Amino acid sequence: MNRSLPQPEPNPNSRDASRFGLLRHRAYARFLFVRIAASIALQVQAVAVGWQMYELTRSPFQLGLVGLVQFIPSIGLFLVTGHAADRYDRRVVTFAAQFAEACAVATLALANATGRLSPGLLLAMAFVIGTGRAFEQPSLQSSLPNIVPADVLPRAIAGSTSASQIAIVAGPALGGLLIALSPTLVFASCAALWLSSGLVMRGIAMQRATPKREPVDMKTLLGGLAFIGRHKVVLGAILLDLFAVLFGNAMALLPIFARDIFMSGPLSFGMLRAAPAAGALLSALTLTRWPIAGRVGRIMFGAVATFGIGTILLALSPSLPFGMAAMFIVGAADTVSVVIRQSLLLLHTPDEMRGRVFAVGSMFTGTSNQLGDFRAGAAAALFGTVPAVLIGGLSTLTVVLVSTRIFRQLYRADRYGPADQAP
Image 1 (cartoon, rainbow, N blue to C red):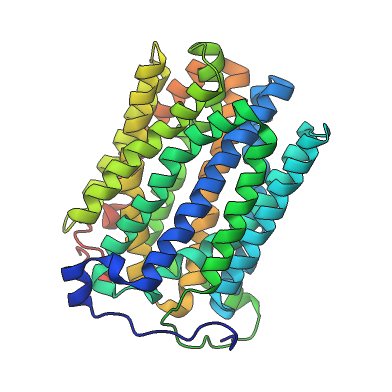
Image 2 (image 1 turned 180 degrees about the horizontal axis):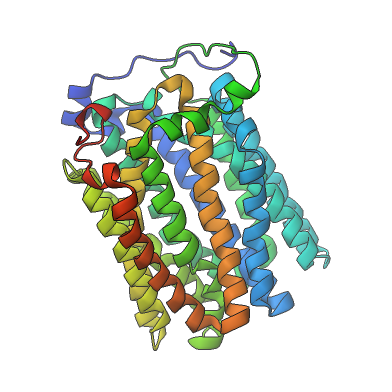
């Protein structure tokens, strides 16, 4: 472990964590700041890049390309990013990734200030941000079990999700407001947030044994894939999320809903982007207070089905308030699924494997989100925006029905831990 970093402090015992609340963990409180700052930066830049791209091109296909270029690093580098999270200090890896993201949005701020912003530059910097995220997510997400006791980990995941969703609620609306004032200010603010997040992450005290320096070979690099392939509950949770979001994700098309369908401006677009985060926040706060204690598999399938229903409601929305309500449902359902999936991954995976397993998981979730953005943009260009979203929601419901047959172990799962799975 790097000796220049703070040495680990003892974690409070799990009984104290349950009795007094997770915020009494100093390391956990700092971790929440990292999630909040990084989430605000990510969401604000997503609003800014999406709006600027549509302003410059008026092309739904170009909006889809933003998702595609962010997806490419997730799938192309997942072997390297997972190995980095398991082999090196996860705090340092996260800092380096967030520093790269800060540099990318700082470049966009400078380009906009000098009148040199172009679709090509937006796509190039989106690729850099996607690369940073590919390294950031496995290291950041696999750090949480090193901060809190295992028996409060589902609550900690829900609390962490609550923190990021608080930021996501404010982020899109803030991004829409700042775009109306100055796109340069938007990108510069994102740079400051990512830089501060990385610096705080470096100072977090964590409980983790010095990682074993395994030889770099294909067996080591592919260890995450092999582990997931052997654990059908984890595999089912990842693939269910991948295909549902791949077909049902409509986030890339929200600029079109705001401008061309609901006849609104950037502030309304920000509110539309914030609606799923508001739903996610409500779900996350509820799960922090009342964590899911049983029937986790059936609840996850129900949440994914509700996600598909919310997408269908968005396609049928006649006005902005109806569209916001539909996206609220989408966000609330998605968060239930995310908390269950992350808890399953973390509690089924030993610490020395978590980086590689989360890299595979991040690749799949990145695939579903970014490639889902591309699918949505391409489908909208072919069929029109409303039909594309409607087809996506119906496809998500079909995925849920088929998956109840294919992933029977996940559907029958009662508890998070591997020893508690139904036979």
